[in-house]
Image (tube, rainbow, N blue to C red):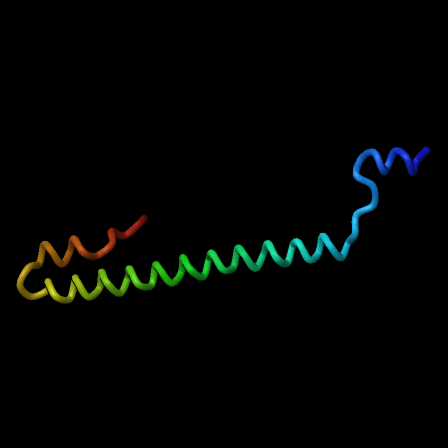
Length: 71
């Protein structure tokens, strides 16, 4: 009776398969986060270069190139 009930609700799951699935999912998430980090670093570098280029001749432009501080 219990075995038929368990098979109705999904039966036994292979713990190795679920562990593998979890590892694959975490690796995919890590890959996405690494790409986001790389994009943000590039954006920071571009904004810093823009601010430095405008620092002497165009102060309002230099300030607008910098990200606004969050409080």
